[in-house]
Image (tube, rainbow, N blue to C red; front, side, top):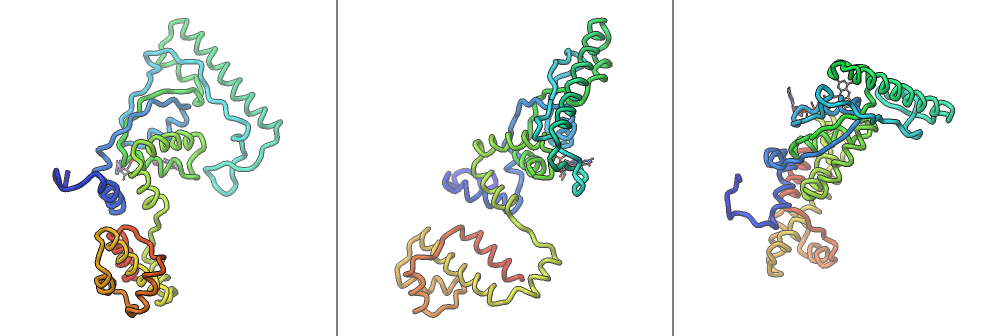
Length: 284
Ligand SMILES: Cc1cc2nc3c(=O)[nH]c(=O)nc-3n(C[C@H](O)[C@H](O)[C@H](O)COP(=O)(O)OP(=O)(O)OC[C@H]3O[C@@H](n4cnc5c(N)ncnc54)[C@H](O)[C@@H]3O)c2cc1C
């Protein structure tokens, strides 16, 4: 939209998507919408609704009768309260105790549902009697969100710090995103999930301890890589290559350049991204 019709080719989409993700130009990602039909325990839904940018249409227990559908954790997900992470779980629980946990889950769910049914059949208001049902009861909704905010959801809820029971939903939605928006997903992985940002304090430490020669080596590699990429995108005559490399601020002599060039080991990539990396290194 910003560039106008006819100014780009489909083949440039991937590069543009990567550029947008890298620079947090997020509005185009807001134009892609996903709608999921989800069914989850109420305690998972409680966490899920904290993501305020979505549109939600939920199954109503005021109008409709509750269904006998409860979440029962598998034994491997029944763990102790973590001593390190106040919001987590850890450790292996003896079978006797996991059996007891499962038994309690069943007991409370089945008994409360019997009571609910009794009161429902006696004609009591469903909006009130739902209050006796526990939070492992399943609820169901349509959840619509845009790609930008969905990726934000996934970054928080597919993270290892998120509760297992919401993580499985987040991972499942991530699988859809991967299929529907593969370039955006790839860019999100490269720049958000696996990208690193350094604070001012961290940069100061790098400034103090990272030897200049290491930075110079990387800058030199970048000069070669930019040259090779420009050449790949628009082939140059042999005699144009060394001047092109010098233009990228490469410092090797022409002989050294020829040797390295002919080794065939120079990688190519995205010129804009390499130049951005170069300016980051130069700012150190
Ligand atoms: C591991 C984990 C542990 C958590 N523990 C707790 C907890 O103990 N207690 C608790 O209460 N919550 C907890 N949360 C919920 C958390 O604090 C957030 O409410 C939730 O993750 C939603 O994040 P969000 O606000 O970024 O998302 P969204 O609501 O989807 O918002 C997306 C973005 O939009 C912007 N935005 C949306 N609404 C506003 C607004 N009103 N004002 C300003 N900016 C806005 C913000 O930039 C926000 O990041 C936890 C979440 C996680 C992942």
